Length: 426
Image (cartoon, rainbow, N blue to C red):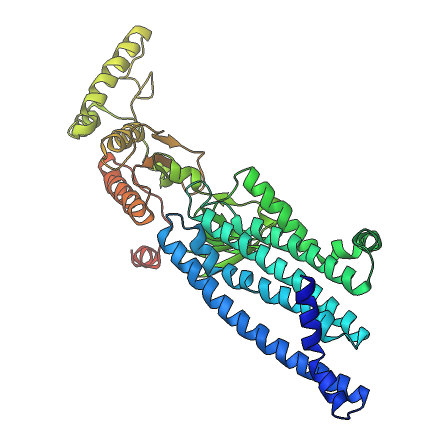
């Protein structure tokens, strides 16, 4: 080792000694010697760097082609081999600085600091490459593919850069890390203000992940931001949602915990998608049913058994209670056309091939309104795909709406211009 150092010292001073022997002044000889040494070291290091980068990258590529894991593939894509290849040229430069700047102490100190800063940056880039590789690799696994890995990776990278900059400023200022951090504590309030959004995003990322509020691939709706689509990216500051019209909506990450949004994952993981829609029946069209009406509705096969069984129970009850139907039809219990229509809707939904029979299914009254009596269909389609869901819902309501007149009921709708025209002409 000592012999090598002596050899380097002699080589670095070779031009200097030759110039002195040739009659040059000491100052001139030192400057020319410095320039020659810088050029020689730069060229040698540059050539070594190119050769090492080529060799290391090819070695990694050959290794990744033979290995079964994809982790090393992502290492290559993140330029990890190139950063590693810079280590040996750095060691050469670091060791050559004392010999190159032997006659210039000021430049010696300056370039020593520069190389130290370069080493810090190189370590930062290597660590950043490892973090990105880990993120991309975990995204290919079933356990982590829907987790907000971008947020976590960005947080780690921010911390890496934070500590890297602390070491750089400490190196430039020539003070210890502990003393520098103590000084930095006084400016913590300003840093908190500058990194407010980053801190909020970091906290939001942790909360959304811990509570499993949203994952990549979830369908969410957030009316405040005009978002209605699939989550395609979750990072530290924003959540990107690809809407169904293929536009992209960007939502602040912290808005997921400060504002309300709807996540449709529960529906997607369930056995069906809910259909909840009403038709409005004109109240004046609702009536008690006479024997003739019952006979007429009995021709509808879906409710024939229900009408007969129900009417036997009603007749038995009225007879036991002594109600006289001949005096007024309102006496006692009666069937109504709306009641039979509700039962028809229930039976139709139960027999429909696209409804989920294991989930809640009903036809119900809602509170009467100025537009009539709302009859709500509440059922779940077995097919959750949007286009098929819409077709199933349309098929159900087209049938029900067409069936309404067969029960002597009317659907309420506001009069159109044609209706008003006909009224005026009459």
